[in-house]
Length: 475
Ligand code: NAP
Image (cartoon, rainbow, N blue to C red):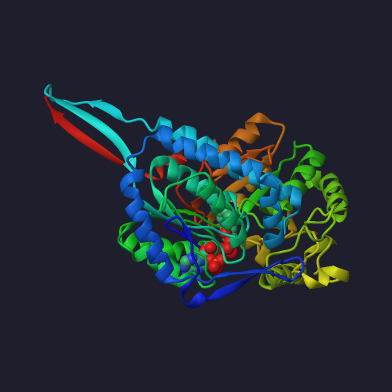
């Protein structure tokens, strides 16, 4: 753990093991911290806030830009650590490190643009001055699926705004977090500005985060169930809250779309990170007139994917994070098949050879998916493309919006009017129109409904770490 500028072990030297999901091997043992460690880290962050908040955005940008440079210098090492503990192919891990570094450089600059306002008053003697100030100590909780970018997407704007931070990374991927904090240390951040608490049981750490009066803000990325629980507790103590939660993205291929282009796009985005992405398409609505062309291209490409250890050359899809994740995917596929869905490729666990040591499920295409199936209603978080044929463009908007989630959605169409109608009507926060990567440090990322509160990235991302203050001046 990294607390007040020093590396620390847990009370009584308690430790937990970090495993490789491709091989089942133990990679390392790490400090198993709890409420006590979280409290010490929060105390350090509160003390450091007194001076960090008084630095200028130009000074803070220098620290962030040094961290950005170090992250890019260490890109390959960071990617290897990530692949070992999370499983994604090395090339995908390299891409994630670059995406993560972007949040440091983008917010280093954006911190300089936290402008106030002067508002005219109805009284001739009065002026209103509006100022934005850092909220204070930020408690951050991140998931395992994007082990580095989920950290910098929070810490980049928080640090640029003048906040200090305590981070709890996921139990499955703390090693990437540790390498990231070595970068913060080497970039020279003063003691207490960034703090890291690792642990196996997240509850005592979470309880400290939502109840400690020194914490001003909770920022959480993870499942909707845990996010709702923590947000409720934090709100009870009037802490500021942002949540990036689960998704159930529709991917809509309209009648006028190019079915092959859409199928190529779907294969790339659906199987990214073995389907373990909050913006992963989960319900793929394809107009029946495009179905044959779409399925031919998709099935061929999916059947050609190579599952394996992400460190090996040629591997295009890694393992799932653990056995529970494989069991969930398996039960969704079984349920769908029992209710009439057809498996076009995949559909089962992969246990042949070395794959038997890890948590592998074959990349799968299911068609004839209907609303009574679990996969139509629940986030899969696995490598299954669930195809729902449809007949009428006018029905598909309501079908896509028929979910409690509201994070990402995708539309394929060559008709601008149709595409714009869906873009405006979809009740989701992030829409890709003939585009499978609608995310960037410069663009707002976040969801509606059960997918969360607030936005990360973009100028909205920094405002999540700022309080507004108004001064009425009588002259
Ligand atoms: P999760 O179980 O909610 O875990 C996320 C984080 O919360 C982990 O650090 C976890 O710690 C911690 N946590 C769990 N229970 C807690 C508690 N009682 N108190 C405090 N912290 C607690 O979710 P996950 O399975 O890791 O992540 C997958 C989910 O994240 C999916 O639903 C996905 O859609 C969502 N996600 C959303 C976005 C987005 O931007 N919207 C991005 C990525 C992922 P442990 O690891 O120690 O359990």
